[in-house]
Structures are given as structure tokens and as C-alpha cells.
Image (spheres, rainbow, N blue to C red):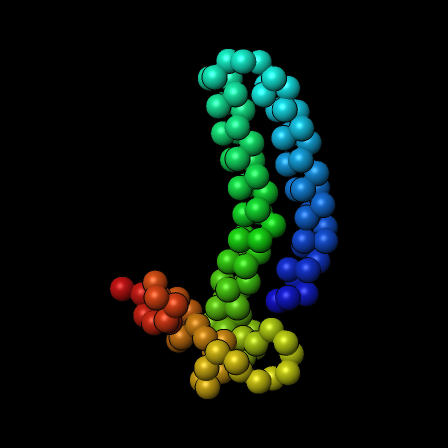
Length: 114
């Protein structure tokens, strides 16, 4: 799973970062006028773009790693560990910490979806 995340970030990480930075640079002229509305709008857009880039590069791969791990465990694609050692770090049951049905609970526990 870590190999998939690394390869996707190496392929898509740089273009995502470039597009975010170039868009923010394109919005900087909107900060020059003295108009309060224009400056506030441009700051808001820059913050949204920065959060989008952070989510695309950090949050989304982390979430997909968790979901992918659960899918692999439920589908029988392995024991759910990422390091290839064969040892299960999340639990002793060998399902990668995803429970029998792969549903992760709100408090980080794993259980049955109701």
C-alpha cells in the first residue's frame, strides 16, 4: 500500500503543488487594490486553494491508505500490513485492524456497520 501511495504522489504530487502555487500567484494582483471586498475575496480564495493542496497531498493519501488497507483485508488480499513483514501491527486477528466487515468506527475502533 505504501508503494502505491508513493508512486501516486510522485506522479501527481508535483503537478498538484504547481497548480496550487501558480493559482495563488495569479491571485496576488487582487491584493493590491484598496478595495476591502476584493482583498478579502482573494485571501479567501488563496486559503481555499492552500487547503485543497494540503488535502490532496496529505489527507487524501492517508485516508486512501486506511480504506485500501481495509478493502485488502476484507477481500482477502493479505493480512493488511504495509511493511511486508507479515506481522500485524494493528491487532492479533490478521485483518489489518479492519474487523470482519472492514468498517472503521468513529472512535478509531473497528466494528460492524449498522
